Amino acid sequence: NAGVTQTPKFRILKIGQSMTLQCTQDMNHNYMYWYRQDPGMGLKLIYYSVGAGITDKGEVPNGYNVSRSTTEDFPLRLELAAPSQTSVYFCASSLQGAGTEAFFGQGTRLTVV
Amino acid sequence: KQEVTQIPAALSVPEGENLVLNCSFTDSAIYNLQWFRQDPGKGLTSLLLIQSSQREQTSGRLNASLDKSSGRSTLYIAASQPGDSATYLCAVRSTEGAGSYQLTFGKGTKLSVIP
Image: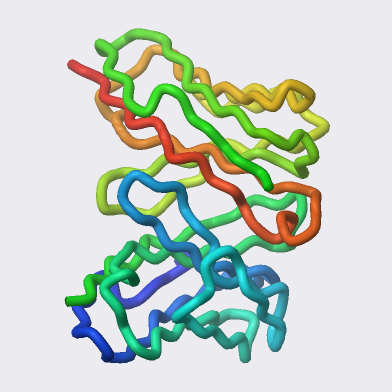
């Protein structure tokens, strides 16, 4: 009963370093999302995918890249980490878009120093 | 652009009290509204999903209502318990354009239930 799994849970990066946040879901959901949550702010959509091979930008995509080679996996790539990317990152999935329930992972807390 | 507001930002109540959390949204063209619970340092747990055609949904001590035309939803928690202490988030999925692919979130209400 795994649902949406994110790794790692915590990470500290230095400015300019790169990393990939991993996300996998075992519910055979078509839609997957990446959000970031900053203190005192609502969650903001970074990227989303409506199926394998299809991705699109959300509200705050700058500094990030994604890929969706399989239904299960949706990794988020940070190429040149900046302090502004210090945040908590959440991956989510839903069976479809409209009308379906979204399920979230436990989050990755990233600090860029 | 859809905007979601949750009032109050924080709420403290004694154990056993019934309480209401409020959520308002600016664009009534929505597919659904979802309430989540977030514990400190944890992910989001889905509590209730209300479709735009529904007026309310119930799960145990939780009852969520939706008035789409006025852009409002409430989450009612009966007989509150200390274990209900968490941040409650409201999110809507809009029908317009790219908004249909995302949930727009409020900033949440932080609930503390005092034993």
